[in-house]
Length: 132
Image (cartoon, rainbow, N blue to C red; front, side):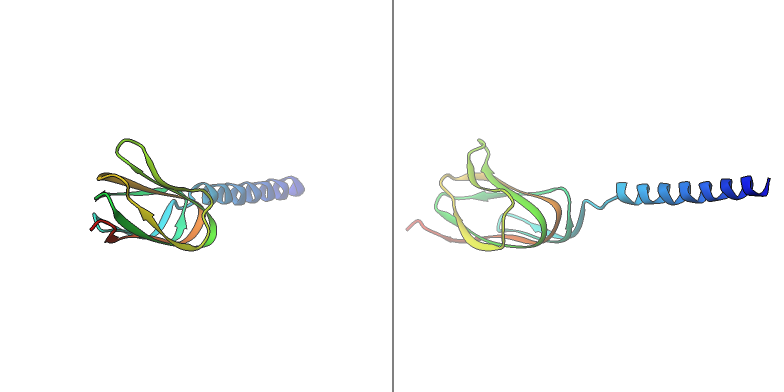
């Protein structure tokens, strides 16, 4: 009889530990960090990115977007497109880099940054125009 009680207690403890572990895994954070976005910049610094963060900017033809990416963990995909869906930049599983995105048409652009178990930063900042 004592053996049966001990077995039940052990089974309850194992079940409780399994349940707590499952709940902890299912409540994984989607975003932890700082996000600043307006018509001049979209600055994203994150210790956890498991979602898509977005910002819109109104941009003029000829403007340049200075882009700085630093990824220290996980994967990050980026897409920048205008209102009509024309892609100005797309990168999958991007690496740490610095580059410029040229704007071909005036309009509202959406900047989407999607991460999976990612840590790092992605900065888009409006630079000088190439028009004279």
